[in-house]
Image (cartoon, rainbow, N blue to C red; front, side, top):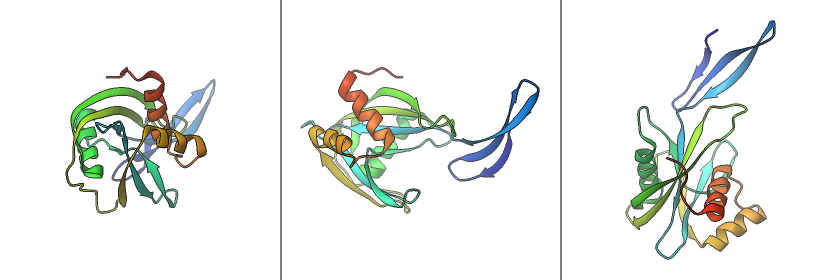
Length: 173
């Protein structure tokens, strides 16, 4: 049975999927997402470029890595370069794939691709009109302390930073 689309929004759709278990078919609502990227921008002195980002869904400002949703047909690396420049003003001389993961597989098919951005060149940010963003370069020790003490609660930031700190080398593609 095909998905029944319940809602189409600018960035995602909500669909009712029908799952058959034995003789019974059950509805299962899912969020269909085009995918996203998260960027770990590293300055030449080793600091990480974080952003304070007002998140209406949780009603507060979060400290996180820059990130964004893929446009239709957009390659993840192109999206990563675009989002980094829009949200922080930095342009990356080099973008290296780090890892891929599903953000919340119990309710969405959103697949996130993480990149490390290096050889950064500063410039002017151009956030979307609905975004409230402040750039916050932070030492790696400050970022790890923020994860440990709960100041950083954004899952994509936690996963990307801890993966990078633990494994350091690239894996994804």
